[in-house]
Image 1 (cartoon, rainbow, N blue to C red):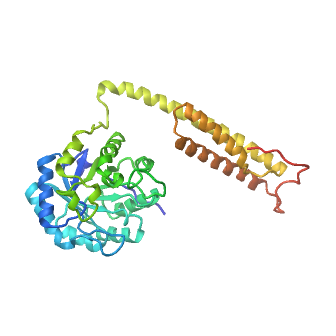
Image 2 (image 1 turned 180 degrees about the vertical axis):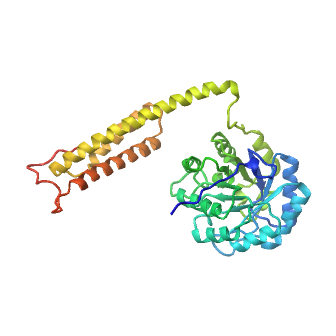
Length: 383
């Protein structure tokens, strides 16, 4: 079955007067009309560059008993924000009923939360509710690092006719301890952009950092990676917030944070373009050489597979592989490459080598099902 194309439009074509970098700010939750309006006015005074006001109306909680948002009662508050400040309004939807209520209230932008994105049934229900209504929709990455679930959610919305479509990177829950609330795992949004280069991609540094002290570094990293914008949780009094109090900032703190960021250009000025293109040409040449060398390595791996099959030697040789990996880690350190990068690259090479050698054995299996002849003696350890 052919996947539906994702023909996402750039922000400049969204007919909302927005462009890159798009700045979105507002509280985690809409708690009261006063809190929502005070925060919105504070944002406009402190950071006039902000174009959209975010606030959670319906809040999914892990366990019952926590503040689950003000619900439908908060929608008129967002209408007042738009009327009094001119900011676009934005909220999270998780059910078709949320979609209907938000659209009826005139909410400008919708987002799909990280708990909803990985559920195909929920996503299809939302897509069905949006059929024929080309409202802008932002899709947060799923809680766990699964690129296909993220893309699948976007595809369901695209199939419903949503062309003003964007993604939000908010980090992933992961078993490894990191200094962040959610691990950034920057390779996932990079891979998403590689698969869907036309898609606008916004970073939510609040949910990645989990604390204002680390907001700046995450936001700058996103801008350096050419993200399309930032969504930052902002509250008039973070200490009194009813959800995510530890990661929200005041409007004045938001202004200080944004003033310290360097906005990168997507395309360099003309006088620098030739120099950049020369570097890119060099990278293209090196990538070609890498591919050629990998191809040669896999050819040798196949020959080793043939030797192992002939002499009845096991394909997997863990001790040999450990020696290879240790040697490459030492070399990588000398070259300034991280151990994580070396392990990822070498493990991928190892997996492909095993696959190629296994394919050799499968092709050589005789009709009787036996693998090769009996060895005349102990076989050598070869990889």
